[in-house]
Length: 453
Ligand SMILES: Cc1cc2nc3c(=O)[nH]c(=O)nc-3n(C[C@H](O)[C@H](O)[C@H](O)COP(=O)(O)OP(=O)(O)OC[C@H]3O[C@@H](n4cnc5c(N)ncnc54)[C@H](O)[C@@H]3O)c2cc1C
Figure: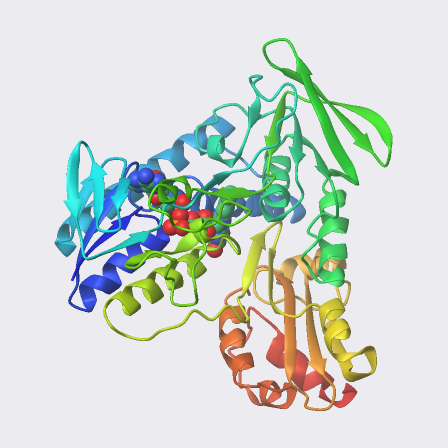
């Protein structure tokens, strides 16, 4: 089975490897770089910078001399790392013996793709073309200094005064990172900053962001960016009042839009948010044409894109595999790792009723570290203990949601997710013999608080 895979991001790469492993013959077409946006412009860039910023934060909090490199040097290092990763992906692709074509693909019909003026034929097609930044159309967007996450990797100067528009995962992460590196940061969010978080986790994140000098305005609607050739300020309506914020850089973190245009010409159904419509086997409405990853819409996460790619490949190769979107863990790199899986307290109450829900929490300010790396910090400032919260169904004692701010604990979330799918209870959690000191405290918390539910 010869399968054309368009795009070599997480969705495309994982579908191609799965196809190859199952005896298929993938042909990968990529217009830019192997690894896609995730490796070249997004996850790795953001998480590497967050690692650097957290190290600075911890160093400062411990009263040590940070001895920081200049922003220019840090970004130079990051670009070298990015180049090294590109070389690795190229080598890996060569070694796998997979057919790979560099160029922009255009769909001609459900079995034909045009690339570099040549026609490539396949028995099936997987569209894995990802997404791009979604930015509002407001005056001043073309000024120098108006950027999205796409531009971060090429930055050489740290903004003095940065306004981040959008307080979701990407906006909050970059506000925290660039603030820690030395910019004066203001976040403007139309609704709630980190609005998808459980309220206790969110309150802790906001308190700590503010304590690091980041200004946050919710209910803010951006009207105009002002300046000559470069950004000088930004006009916004905040709670009905017009306010002007001085800035030499404005970072738009206002969402993503799927790159689905490629599919329109062959009659593939596209949704209202520009996403390709697929069923749970990743099939579009056009026979033999599949889609996976950001191009089919949220949640816009790399592991989800990988899994969708794998599901598409498996179905093409004759298996019957369906995508399961339940209990997907996620994390945001702030001054700690903020991670979650399952229901927030509010969602659990809405679904089960307040009387049927129990909450266990190790709040910040219990002078007990949130696992490794916070042992010193918990002594210095009790608010740096991080936090852990479990949302339970009272009668069955099943864990419905887990939420955590910790230095190194986020991996607990994917294992918890797998257990929660099997109906994992607080009593079973308490039975776990953990490594010690551990980097998430859920098993300890369960043992200590078992009697409270
Ligand atoms: C700033 C930021 C940080 C993020 N951090 C994380 C994180 O820490 N963890 C996480 O799980 N998720 C994160 N995400 C989300 C993650 O980046 C995406 O979900 C993931 O990249 C989706 O993979 P994909 O393969 O669908 O698309 P992409 O990675 O976008 O890859 C699509 C590829 O298709 C190629 N392409 C497009 N059109 C064509 C064409 N016509 N012909 C040939 N090639 C084409 C593109 O060049 C690209 O290489 C982040 C997102 C952002 C914006």
